[in-house]
Length: 558
Image (tube, rainbow, N blue to C red; front, side, top):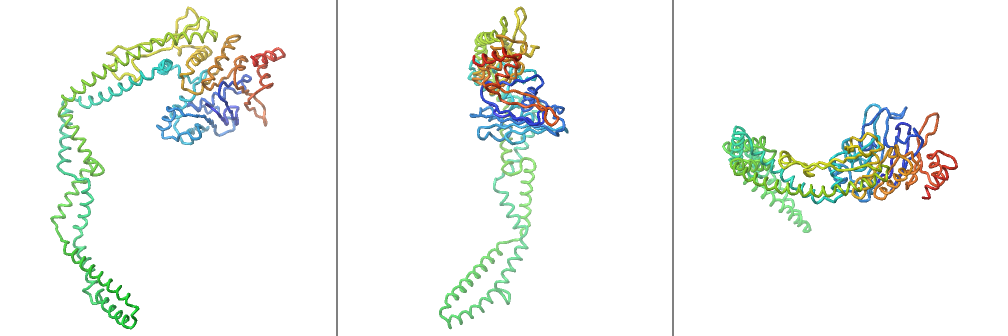
């Protein structure tokens, strides 16, 4: 649910924080008090266009921030965050923020991480459903209507089966497309693949050989210098007049005399003997190392050629020897597939035929299940509409199913072969029209309210916002609207802006927007009302006076 909404420097609002509760929340107030700012702020958070003329006069920027409490974060929201590389929710809170400036800078944040406006809008569609003159009405989209129909009937299993088959068909079609090319292109592909396979396979690459070759190349290419250095070291050990061996002999004689005088110095003599032994070992190793080194121009040329071959293959096929080998294996598989193209196409076509048979059967089952649902859904919605003042209205769902030829002419939707259209006729004798063709926002809002009442248990969007749901209604219908709002509030959080006392009286929580003059400037503020304050607000909505106050008290008791 939406727990906190904060708006700064938007229209008449310098800084407003609205703390909401679960259930049915109502916002009321005089016309022009700033109720629309609440809707406007929330609209910005779900991706609506920013109108910079609404930035409060004298301010450089505007910001809107919302905190949603998500006790068990729905998988679809978690997936949306993960897909965009955003932080997951902490402490069961999802935080959205948007700022924009008069100069055009626009920034969005989700859980503290920078986000795109598209990402914010996509997440907003999962969180808030708005109905009114500034609507964000997912129910107007045919795909959403289809989702609702399926959710109403619990057809998720049918759709999952269909989607799996449709995805497999797409994979087979992609494999087929890679094989179906004109003869010239086919010949070119064969030539290229044959060349690549031959070039890589003839090199007989080994994953670890490059490092070994580079080590040997370094040694062979520097053979003369290595011999020179080894000989210089040998000279220092034994050949020169002041070599280590000469100095070690002189030192040994001194230590022998030292030990003869002081028997306790025997350990020092032993250490000297160990050092002399190590020098002899060093001399032997150096001699053997120098004997092994040969200046071999032929081997050097061989190593250079091999390394050049490897570098050439890496430039063409991969950054490492392992990648080149992998490329060669994949090219060999493609070559084998192309060389046996006709046989492979026959196999793929056979698989596609089987998949399309299964897909058509799954789609037919899904269509049949939907057709059975439509009368039940229509009847339930009409009942709700009757309560909302449309005594002789009609509501229907038109379902169109494409033929098999049409279905497989391209890529079918993952939701089946059907297209649905919610249709509504508010008055008898009028033809039913699609919901998106309804001109009156009041009619639209009440149809949405009827649908939301019927679908409250199936709908997954947690926050529903209704603006002008009370347009052109009154009396018993207003009472019915309030009852419907409260009923939906048991399943979802409802936020409703209303001018009708019966609609407001049914709310679990009531907020009032007022204007006041502060430091010579008009500002809007919002406060919760309870007890006498709420009675006073309802009485104002009823026209004021003692009779209105008694009526307000009666409505709250009822």
